[in-house]
Amino acid sequence: HAADAAQRELATASIFARFKEAGGLLASLEAMAAGAKEFGKDKTALARSAVQAWGALAAVLDGRVVKSGLINQFLKVMGDSFSHPSPDVRAEAMAAWANLATLFNSMNSTIAHPSRLKLVLTPVVSAINTEREPGVMAAALATWIHILSLLSRAPLDLYDRAFPSAV
Image 1: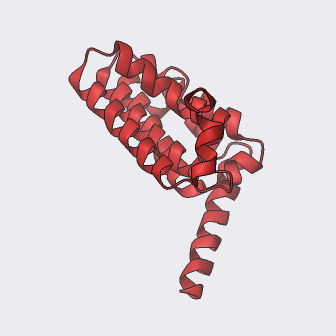
Image 2: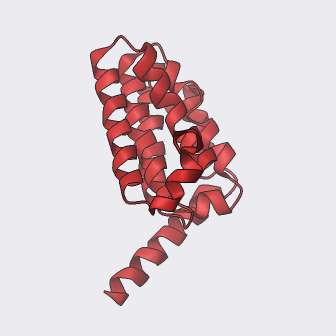
């Protein structure tokens, strides 16, 4: 298992290096999300592809994206995805967002840190309160359940910090 872990670490480090370099994966995601014409797809397909790639990167990058200071730039890529005119893009955004919750949870302070919890819950709660499309609502509820499952594994003393008004 040590060899597998070392191989996984090497692969993640390589992906992260390509992610943060000028003109690398992050810049490509930003261009895709903005609907850059050089990718040759219609804007909805391009937005879906950007959101899917974003979710895959969130699943792979672990805490490096946070610790490197690139998290705000990475989050900006999702910008308008939650309010995109296409319900398919909004549903994909919710699914990708679940990976951000997992990324935060993999870090030492867990997802129960109040600012992280607020960040990951904001678009989910907004969708649950306002969304009319069944596919988007289903994706938002699946993300909500995923976040709850992550929280259920957090030490009990973190709930006091995550939900101060409940104690």
